[in-house]
Length: 288
Image 1 (cartoon, rainbow, N blue to C red):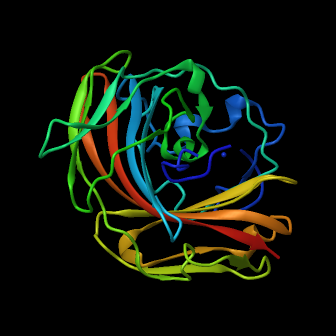
Image 2: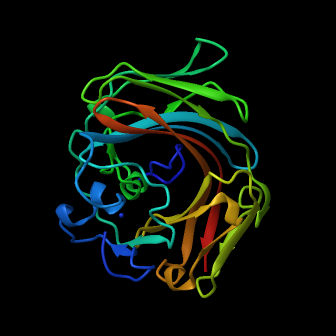
C-alpha cells in the first residue's frame, strides 16, 4: 500500500468514528467503500472522467526527491482536497484488486521557461496500484501511471502540464510550485517521532498561502495495518489527529507525511482535471 505525498500521496472503508469519516475496510464489499462518490459535492456527474496530475517534492530532513504521477476515474464531479477535514481513519485494511482505470495517454511536465520535459508519464497496466488518498479526493482509487522520478524544479516556479489524450481527452494547464514548511513543530523530518496513543497529536507550521491545503498521513504497516488522513487549510497553521484514532494503532513503527498542496484546473472537453503541486516532509514514527 502506498503512503501519501506523490512519493506516496498516492498512497479508505467503514465504523470507527472520526467525524463520520473513519472506516474499517476489512470484509467490506468494494461497492460500499466509497470511490468517487466519497469526496464529490453530491448530485449527478457533470463530466465523463475526473482526475489529477501530481508533481511532488518530498524531504526526509536530509535529501529531497522529485516525482510525478497521475490518476483518473469515471463518473465524478471534481477533486476535493478537503474531503478529510475531520480526519479519515482506516484500520484492518483489505484491498480489492483494482480495475483498469481510464487514462489521458502520455503526459509531459515542463517549465514555462523551457520546452524541456522534466518528466514524462506513460500509462501501463504493469504499474496498476491502489491509491486510498486519491479515493478520498474523489478519484476511484487506482492509477496506471507509474510514480516517476523527475528532474528538479524551484519553489514558486510555474510548471506546464500537457496530455496527448486517450479516454480522457487532451488537456493542458499550468501550476505554481510551493515552498517547504517553515516553523514546523514537531519537525518530523529531522528526528524520530514517538506518538503517544493516549494523546492527541498536534502539528503546527507557518502558513504560506491562503488557497493551499495541508494533508497529514499517519500510517502503520504490519499487524493491524491502518492509516489516517487529516486535511486542513494551510492558513489554519495546525492539524490534529485525535487520540481516539491513535489508540486504534498497535504499538510499533510507522510513518508520517505532511504535504502542502496547490491546485489549478486544466480544461478538457470530457473531464475535470486538477493539477496538484505538492511539497512535503516525511519521517519515521514509533507508536507507544
